[in-house]
Image (cartoon, rainbow, N blue to C red; front, side, top):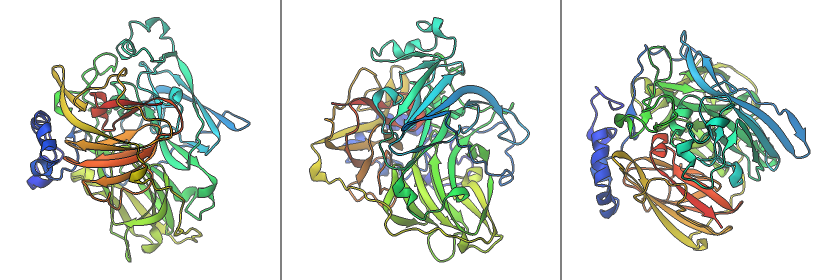
Length: 537
């Protein structure tokens, strides 16, 4: 069932069906051999994935207040380090009004609590696993030593699982990785955070089961702040809103509906064949609430937007648009502030991307209802949330013409250019997702950058693939042989590949030596093979 089933649609706008995926996967080489002329086969597709319909009536939108995740307080401060504690546990939440939904949550909430850190000040997070399965925590966007990066086989076993280490649910994940690190019950993740202010997030990263684990709730914000950002007159306090946007579907009993082959998430990874392209829900959640509403004063607000969906892409816009100019002023990207602000009428956001946006609600009359819409959705997924401009208020914020200093990396600085092809293919007798024709193996190193070197990585794709690199930030050099466009600026760690497209990124591989991952952040693609390793030397 595709996202827009039952609606008239031109072929150029139709999402890819499973039949289309299978046909393209078999002929992916033709797409590349034809000079990446995939648009002749596909046209612009909205999202790569299949809609999974809820089995309960969907609630009326804009009835639930926007929740803001609580900020976690440190349990101890010592010198230049802060220590936090989080328990990963099962809980229930009322996400749809009147229904109870079982979740897996950091501290039993969805999203998890927000961690706020200072750049250059070490953050240590003690994670205790009280869930029934192993977990891995990845700080997405963190400049992190390899032992705390959340490598997919570095497992934290459930409390009390020591006797099952060789025969339990973790065996198939680490038995083929001699470098796997397995801990019992809990572990400390230590983040030096020698990096600029940015909107990061943390989520589960267990090999083969990231998609369903995040879908059940294992995700939260981690905000890094610094003096450069503090000195700017940007909106702050209750006028700074973190917005974790994701989609979910619900079963008759109120539980999350997800097409796992093994619903215990213990043995057989992957999803039913119909959802191999990716799982898309029909309920849009913001900070865990369905189509919420936020009352705001008629002032500038800073929106830290995160797409935490497994597969769904969004194109965000405001309805009605504000008078007298474009709706959004972008001040930051995945890895922090831009050099200078950029205005947009709409913003495309792929899974795992972050956009730091300012909206001036003072341009609207008091009483205006402003809907954040998704131009890539249909029916209920066309809407995200609503803002009610409730009252006039003083506004001491401003958007400076210069925001930060970013060192541009030039093509001539690169010592190596590497190319990676992201395509569908076969993994044994199952359909999966491959990099250069190979599924993920923890023992294969796909690139060995020298520490401190600048490299260009060229990505080519069959369908939509949001590609994420651990450890480093990068700049987008080109998209389809042209400049990256107005939304591809700044320092990023995730870049969205369009069907039949080539994208070049340039990065300096500094920070730490060790083994790191790069992968597609369509979580179903990630779980079904589309990951690789690089090792900084």
